[in-house]
Every structure is written in structure tokens, then in C-alpha cells.
Image (cartoon, rainbow, N blue to C red; front, top):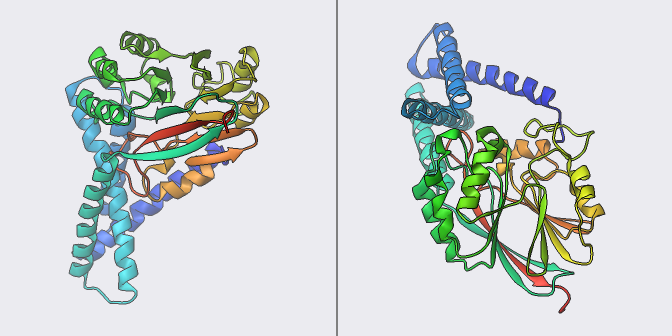
Length: 370
């Protein structure tokens, strides 16, 4: 990560305090309220409860917990859109002096529109296609890359069935899943994995931080029962392509990642221990875009990751550029091409603004025949 967790925490708390003050004063302006202290308390308590409900109940398995989680996470998103809407109204007010009632009408209307639009974008999956020449590849391969599906409180088995249907229409030779298949323990059940049996291509899976928090061993078992190849620090082969599957881990012993355990092997250590054939084409599957330099050292051709969600919701899509060295899309770095998926699902609020839910299609073209 580019900036420290300590600095992120300070900035986050400062942003929360400023947001509460701003929301309270704008609400007081609209409704003609003189005493803003009750508004400070109301907004502060509401935001705290929404955060607690989202983070604290993410792994709840009860129907009540599921309902509270949904209310809390939607509430967090709507609060953000309310702030954005107030800012837009303030900008309009610089040129056209608005009455408090007009200010409120514009702000609340924008909040509703942004919420509906962002919900639609989060649930409308698009296909992003890359044409890549792999120098050591003998035969062309069409691959599909899923990341961050986040089956759970919002996305269920029905959602997965539709995703499988959409993927089958792409007629891929092979499918790669780079972690965070589940969002929470709410979906830790075989019925949320069984649609994977209908995929019309071999599937290779590595875990992510949400899979770790949800229950790796059971997820591995459900995946295997659904016919998925689970790669936990292993190498598999599809035709002449080496598939190097890494469990979610830090890059090296000097690295820090709040989502990856420091007690596991590192990418550096793991790649040193695996018997990688440098004469063959190779792809690494890993949840987060860490350890790219070690892939380069091993002459790995392609590195597929996700995790960042590209920030998911404006303005965090801009903040993500400061948090991650590689945030979204294709990067050509030395010997290794890196692709960071923006993800299919969402974390927390079921919204996307300034990002997209994407399935990635990789047209891997044989370099040896060119």
C-alpha cells in the first residue's frame, strides 16, 4: 500500500467529523433549525450505528442480522450521496442563490437519483476484454476472470446462476476466480456454490480476505464439491499454461497488509518454493495486487488480481489510487502483465459510482506462433 493504515485512520476520522458538521448545518439551513447540537448528535449516532451494523454484522447468519446489515449498509451509502448532493447544491448556489426549500429539493432529489443509479450500476455487470500476447504460449486460450463476487447478504444463489449463464455465453476455455467469492458467513452453504457446476469450462479458484474471514476450509470443500480446482499455493496446468494459485498473503516480510495474515508464507517465499518452469507460459492467481516484483523475478507472464474494487464509490475511486500501487486495469511491468479487476460484487453498501462491476475476458494469444 502507498500510505499507512495509521494515516488512513486519521483521515477517515477527520472526514467523518467534517461530514457530520456539514450535514448538520445544511439540514439546519433547509429546515430553519437554529440549534444544530441535536443534529450533530443524530447524524453522529446514525453514522456510528450504520458503520456498526455493516462491519459488526457482516458475518451474521440470522435473518434479523441480514435485515439490519442491509439497512445499515444502504444507510451508509445514502449518507455519502446526501453529502455529494449537498455539495452540488452549494456549487449551484454560487451562481444562483437558492431558497432553503429549493436547496433541499435539489439535494434530496439528487440523493435519490444517485442511490438508484449507483444501485443499478452495481448490479449491471459489464464485460471488459483484453487481447494479450503471451510470448511462451503455444496455443490461443480464451479465459474469463472473476474476482470479488461477494455472494452473501445481497447477492445470493440466484445472482450466481445469472452470472454463470452470462459467463457460459462467453464460451471461455478456462475460468479463473481470484478470491472473495463469499461476502459473509450468511452464504456459507453448499446451495450458494452449486450453480458453479453449470460452468462450461474448467474453473480455478484462490481465496481472498473475505473467504478467510468466512471460513476457508468449508469454502474449499464446497468449491471442490462443485467441481472447482482449488489452488492453495499450488501449480496446475491447463494445456501449456502454468496456473500458479496463491492463497491471500503479504508480498514479503517487510510488507504490511491489513487484509492478509503476516503468519502465512509470503508471495516471495511461496514463489521460491514452487517449481515454476520458466520455459512455459504462466499466470499467477492472487487476490490482491501485491508482490508483482517477485512475479517478474520468476518471469511469470500474467498476474490476475482484484481486491481493490477500484474504490467502488466516488470519491473513494480517487482515494484508491493513493492506497494501492495498482488499482484497476492493465499494467505492463517488466516481464509480467498485471490485471486488476474492479470486481463483480460490492463490499458494504450495494452501490457503485465511478466504477463498474466487471467480468474480464482474456484473449491470450500464442506468442510462439507469431
